[in-house]
Image (tube, rainbow, N blue to C red; front, side, top):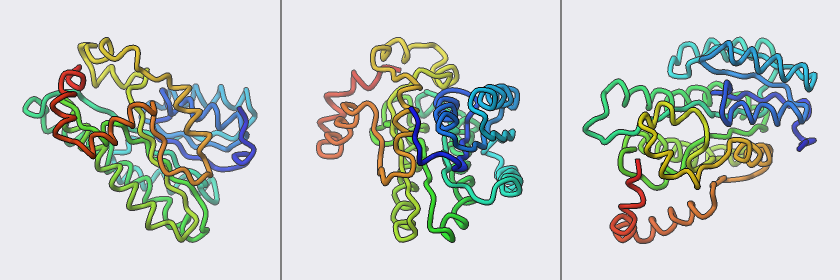
Length: 265
């Protein structure tokens, strides 16, 4: 799949060392985009960098970055702007979750999820906003979750972070509407990535939802297809998003009937 409108565009992807971040990078490189890949694991980034440069002959820069370190976010983006004049697309993909009941979650886990999933995402976005607004061009893609629409048992903190991401994204979209800067939220259900190595230590959730799990390549294709288009939301799978619509209309009934289904972690 080649998207001609991405050729020569500068695309920054956080959390790019694996999962959908790496798959997005592969598809963008195949379309001739210049990439800046960010993640905590510099070894994995360098391996992906070498693969993409050899296969597609595109420019790929990599930086080690933990997005929860806001001072490092600023420093890294300053280095990025020394290498590229502008960032055309920012994909805020970095994130993690821990599935525990609220009374079991430690403060370190709570702060960690908010620092990465929310504050880190906002910090990266803040670094590209001034230039995108000034150019009146750009696209910000925030990876949220269906958990941001329907909270489920044992994901109280994770769901809270994704609710925050959706609120921020929706507000940002309206703020940037007159500047021709597009803003898209991506709300996937469970994806077959290393996310669950941390989130689901016992493997219970993965086992129970195995038939519903999305493949990262599929999710990445949907995201890349949306780049530089006025796509408001990407909801995957579509039937799961129908559940969120029912939840908004009939929350009490949904929680009562859906309790057993939702409590699979």
